[in-house]
Length: 114
Image (tube, rainbow, N blue to C red; front, side):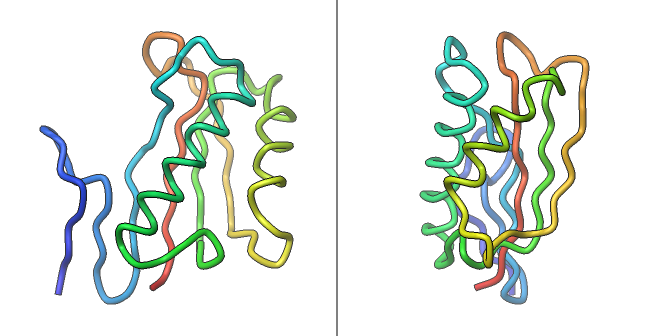
């Protein structure tokens, strides 16, 4: 069975199938923030989105992170390590991209189990 949560005009932010929760690309709302601030805002959103589907960050399986400036990756990594305990780290890829629109510097996609 498929469950869909948090519908927007173009997608559901979260879709669960067979106990696996997929969270679509998540960006910040406040584009004036630096990389660390944008990352913190996104991770707070992910906490809420995962909770909506009955799971949490300790059950993450994978993360794909898209950043517009790989030189700022250490700022993102510092916030990421504050958010997750070492035993809960998922698989992860960080990919440099040319543009995420506006002043958005980072977008994160995750999957977790329930």
